[in-house]
Image (cartoon, rainbow, N blue to C red; front, side, top):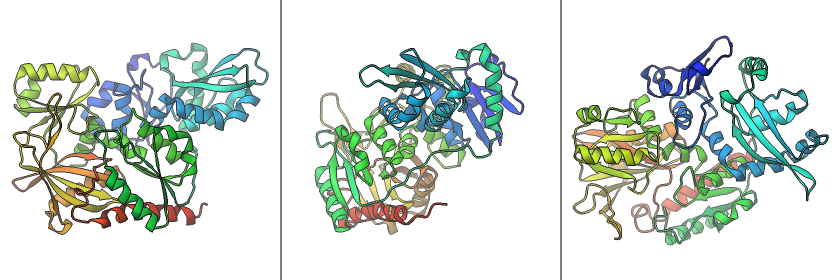
Amino acid sequence: MSILIVLDNPKDWDLDIPDVEVVSSKDYLTNPDFVDRSDIKVFNICKSYRYQTYGYYVSLLAEARKHKPVPNINTIQDIKSLTIIKFASEELENLMQRSFENLKSEKFVLSIYFGKNFSTKYDRLARHLFKLFHAPFLKAFFSFNINSKKWVLQNIDSMSFSEIPQAHKEFVVSSAKEYFSKKNPVTSKKSQSGYDMAILFDPDVEDKPSDLKAIKHFIKAANHMGINVELITKEDYSRLAEFDMLFIRETTAVNHHTYRFSRRAEAEGLVVIDDPQSIIRCSNKVYLSELMNKNNIKAPKTIIINSKTDLNEIVDILKFPIILKQPDSAFSQGVAKVSDMDSFSSSVTQLLSKSDMIIAQEFVPTEFDWRIGVIDKQPLYAFKYYMAGKHWQIVSRKLGGKARYGKVEAISIELVPKEVLKAALKICNLIGDGLYGVDLKEVNGEVYVIEVNDNPNLDFGFEDMFLKDALYFKIMSVFLNRAEKKKFRVYV
């Protein structure tokens, strides 16, 4: 397997590590040669992993290209989560107290290079933190609590290459060589089984993926299968270990409590939908674009824009009108249709103020969009979502007014065109085995995937229009089957 080290400026790299290729983040993201390469492990040491920066996109698109990034997006999110850090501090409490028992100061910063510290007495702690936060270079911040008389992990952060002291670089080289020589770096794993489900649901939010009537039908189906259900809110994070299944029925996002719930639930061994990987992958349209391009899935002509992109060239390729999308837009928000250069330029500027990369897409007008529901890699339901009256989207939102929706028509799975179903299943299978809603367009016999939603709407009287109660039972049966597999799994 080839090793690729990605950083903002390769000229900064002054370490001599054999058989390692060093490239810039910009080159990795924009050079088409990297898209088609396989069998690569990407070590991302960009200065920042902040959401939607180049460092963030290196790991995100490396996952789309199956390049095995370190850190991956899950780790990047964990590093920023104070809740996850608190969880790690509790897990490593005894090890911290033993490691720092002779320290005289009240604060300590531990540098971690590929799971090792310059001082061997901290190696065990460094190794455990590296397992929990799998990134090449880390800084762990500890403080001594005077009241409890105990050391606690206050924060953890990635370390840029420029922060490494010159005196440590020879040690970094040896640590890197030792790590690269390992065929199977150790990762931690937990498992658990049972029949208690938590449904994360906020009835007061306007745009939620299920209404209260649908939630009641989910509870009824679960109870019929012997699954006890409790509705929880974002205030119940500390209670997740009490349950064995988590069903998220709030609109998910990466920088949001829904992701933190999903990540914690997975770490505790719960059966969880939406799983954290699906949230990350589906919530970012840059990732989906790269994934579809890499796997020859038809989509409207799409170009990724950054601050250096020539806008005139985009117009020449896509032609007006052009659709612009914020990478993590949802419920038709963060999406703009522009028809001239002035509105195009101003919209691009506005969207790039929130993300280093955005999506430009050709406009493909249709009377309706297909929505195919998929769970556990099997089709669940099919709909035609018609455009809202006198509007180009299925939802029309006017400033200060109520959202208007187009007509919805339920279709039997057997009557869905084979190419539509094939495209929906292909893209979902590349993402995972969760619950997805795929939006597609059909034009002159050609099928185009628009996007994949990890948290599709399941409302009473709409998505259950055709299947009725069977919809709720099918979804709950997936939870039950996965819980049963965990219960009887044999570990070797």
